[in-house]
Image (cartoon, rainbow, N blue to C red; front, side):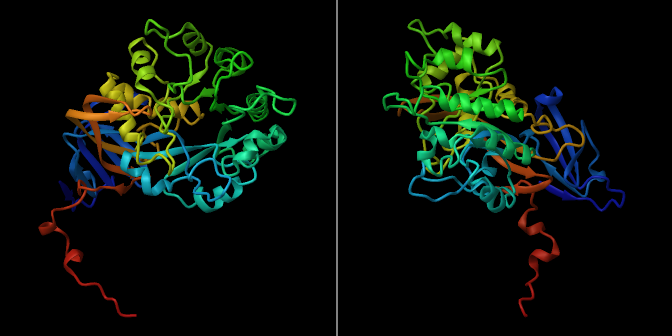
Length: 416
């Protein structure tokens, strides 16, 4: 229900009233009101009077959180015959329905295509788009460049990252030499090492999409020797990684790597999340540091579907709701050096997600075409980006049509 106040002393443009606010960054988990002024969070408190707001939206019975941050997507809608994927998705068209207000493109563009990506997509999107810059010059737009060591130029990549410090949050390496025999032009660790070198030069973390090939390129060497504290291994619960031993326990090298500061990101995707790894890992105290999707146009209809579906899987796997929100807001924001995001702190940009927490019987699938029946699910009711409502499919923030204001009933003047 929405009401409009005639109070001439309004100090808030919008008041979200009566919701269960979960804001892990500020230690809030309870019934609170959220006041928004312009594009910023102005007040978070119990029982803010409705009379101080120009508009009041009743969100009682809903979960209210900071805008969700998906740290791994592909939102550069490139077209090319050499592309690694079908193509990046339109961020505004697909992400608001999951409460996602910020996303990080995970290496779709290399230094050759990043200027086009920024001008034609990042700068025009309502979703806040940040980026990991691919170490290969053509990135995933020109997949062959990811196999060409000469195309991996750490100094050039680092310089571009330094030129766009508010947008480029790190360096990405992916898909390098997964099957062919090693040779002089393709040493096992070339892509990882050059990405880390670029990260060192510009002071940014590296995100690694990796295929282990022991004995020359074993997985434990990646997370215990090659990656630095703060670097990110995405797709952690994919089938190719030695995560779970024969007794269903998490291998020691996983805990050792986490202890030394390596970050483990979910990166669900079309082939990188398997219940047989993720479920026992969670039970053994090894959740992903951040929940993310690896969404692109090739997997958006399944099995990953959305950030909301991925978060719901973890709810049904037994992760508490507060922790699901934490790993979808605070931890990814910290991983990319942006603690100003994923928070409802006073003065923060008013990125807000409003969810229904449903209970029942719900089916979820993984990348091996196996299913899990869960008892919990999140459904997005409203998303705000910088104080503006960008998603409201059921009219949570709208008046009943019979009570709509005068302009609703008036035929617009269509004359030139």
